[in-house]
Length: 316
Image (cartoon, rainbow, N blue to C red):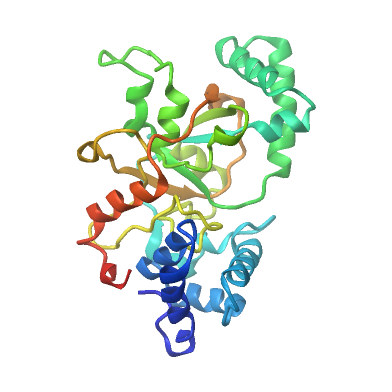
């Protein structure tokens, strides 16, 4: 398991204490660090320069975010995720022609242009349906320019179109978008932070692009994708590490309201920054309700399916 070297001997007991005594939303974070099998010694060393011995959970979170800001969510250069320090987790043999998909909350885009969310979704849908719509084109191009300029170089989480296209294409291959696609896709990808329970519906945009688009964004750098681990993003109880044994990609939580026996494992990867283009915009819509299953219940099911492959499941 991670952080078992002598110099880390105070951090592991801290994780165990956090599991035993923390709020349900914090316990998964410590569980993830104990379960994590994918950290190289170089990445552990890099992380340890930031955390030393946390005074409490709040201190640990602050130190973790300091590491993420300095080493992963970089404004220029290459995140540690896509360096040789993360070599065992790098993916180099993905089919370049297959599609990746990502769901983005576009609230910040509306705010940047002083538009209502309704108007932003209308413009996005107009451009998707009528690419020649000049008004929509001009607005979206302004959105894209601002968006691409302000984005940092953090790893981008994405899923595979082939695993979710049933929400958009019928059995005969004809485009037939499910009327509740945004809520259903959010649940399939385990994006529990996109929850309108305490606010307004969330405007979202589905981006679809090929693996080759990621590769061609920086062809001189062979490291373009990886299996995600606990040091690739800020804390999230909706993330769960994936065992090394038998798993070539990450596996997202399935928040779908369904029988435990219908629980679905969906692949997830992270890839390096790409410049978003309007041609990647596939659908725009709204998340209107909370996830179909709680994080706690989903993690219980998810971990039960993977427990035989985790080396250190008994530690949690």
